[in-house]
Structures are given as C-alpha cells and as structure tokens.
Amino acid sequence: MGNRSNGGVRLTAGRAAVAVLAGSFVIGVVGCSSDESSSPTPTSSNARTPTSSAAPALRDGDLYVALGSSIASGFGISEQSECGRSSRDYPQLVAAELGLRLVDVSCGAASVPHVVDTNQGENPPQIDAVTADTKLITVTVGGNDIAFNGTALGCGDPARLCTEPVDLEANLRALPGQLVSMVEKLQAKAPSARIVFVTYPREMPDTNCPAMSLEDSELAMLRSMGEKLEAAFVEAFATSDALLVDPYAVAGDHTACGPESARWTNGYTVPEGDGFAYHPTAVGHRAMADLIKEALTDRRS
Image (cartoon, rainbow, N blue to C red; front, side, top):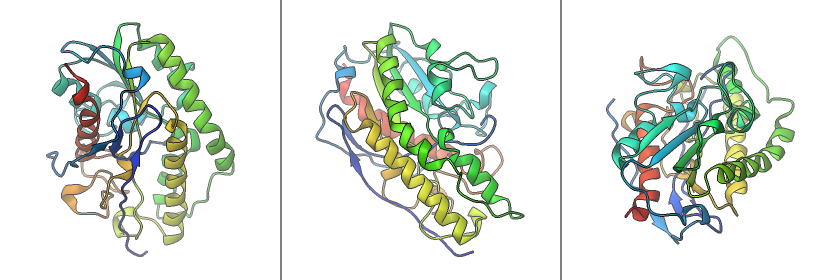
C-alpha cells in the first residue's frame, strides 16, 4: 500500500443553483447504514434564487424534511436512533441552528427508489414525510444505487481483493435521470419548499495511506467510482431548480488520510461513536451543515 491525499475545489451552479464550495458522497453498504472543528469556510458566488426557493424566506418553526441514505443520517455517529440516524447528523445541526422543525427520515442503505416510491423494510418511501407545508428539503442519495460504499467495504477487507461492479456504467448512466425525476416528485409534493441536494464528501484520497486498508489498485478503482458518482450529481443538477451543495469539491484532503482534525470521512477502521467505515465523521457532518447554512442564510428574512 502507498499513501494518499486528496482534495479539490469546484463551484457548481445550475441555472437555478447558488454556487457553493462543497462536495459529498453516499453510503452504499448493504444494510443500514469530537468535537466538530475544521469546518470549511464556504464561499458563494453568482448567487441567484432557484425557482424552488422563490417561496417566502425560511422562518423559525418552518417544516424541514431530511431525506437520504446513511451519508445523510450520520450512520454510526453517537447517539444513534432508528435507521442509523445520529443526533449529530447534518439535518439535526441545520434544524437546530436555523430554528426549523425537523422530520428526519434519512435511513442507512437507502437508494433513490427508497426516497420516491419503494418501501425500505417496514419504512414507507421517504417522500411520504413531505407535505405541502414543507419549506426545506435536504437529500443525499445515489451512492447505493451504484454500490459505491458496499464495494468499498468489500475492498477494505484485507483478506480479499475486489473488483468494480459489473453493472456500474449502466447504473451511472441511469442515475442523473433518476435524481431529476426525484426532484420533480418532491417539487410536486411541496411546491414552496427549497430543495437542497448534498453530495457525498470525498472518501478516497489521491494517495494511499494505511487508514484506508486498500491496495493501490483498489484505491484507484474506488476513487474512479467516487469521481463518476460526483460527475453524475453535477450532471443531474446542472439545470435543476434544486440547490446543489457539493462538499466533494472543497479544497484540501478531508479523507482519513488527511489531518486528524480535518477528516470528514473515515477509513476502514473507525473510532468508536464517530461513524462507519468510509462514511462521514462528526466533523464531516458539521462541515456539511455549515455549507448548507451558507447556502440558505442569505434567503432568510
């Protein structure tokens, strides 16, 4: 194994998006899936109001519905509740700091169908939590649809080598359209809601390190998967009315190979109560929350 480091900056803005420095990733595990320092200093440019944000500004007590997979739910970060939701996930942080009334139905291992039309075990589709009076919706989903984190977990096992999913390219081609359709369904249920899509934070560094528990060839394959997932997110929201907040694109190495205080994601071995393998840490959720707030606060009354 070698060593790795990672980072990158991108300003992403569709015809109706606020350009925000950010980036993100999703859990693809089969099943559910510190002090929060070193938060980014997000910057906004080319700000304009998305169609979905043309409703009245967010006010204290407005309804906020959080959707998505374990990347949104804070899987493994204490304290945990049903479906792998953490009391310190980014929805909880955003709701507390903006004074919003939160309904968090994010759930580990969720895919796009689990958001829009498919039960996840005994849980109904997450969209059922969205009502006409919802004023803010955040969602992080898509990695499980290409088996990203599930593949990473298999690769991290020192006893085996892993390979790229055989249906990866077909699933990547389908993903942007699925995300666009998801947003349309959310807009239909909550016409006055701001919809914020949050990408997966970058999990795979440029240069390997022992914390990843990956062979160099495995890291290269997983890094490519992460890059393609990020590209699918950017494609889906390039012309969307939803706001894209993109932690993946933030500069610096925020992976498990980076400085300890700036690690937004874990490697294969995880400190107790701070997430799951190749998932966001508490620091990562703090960073995602700050990026979301930066995108929203200039639209509050």
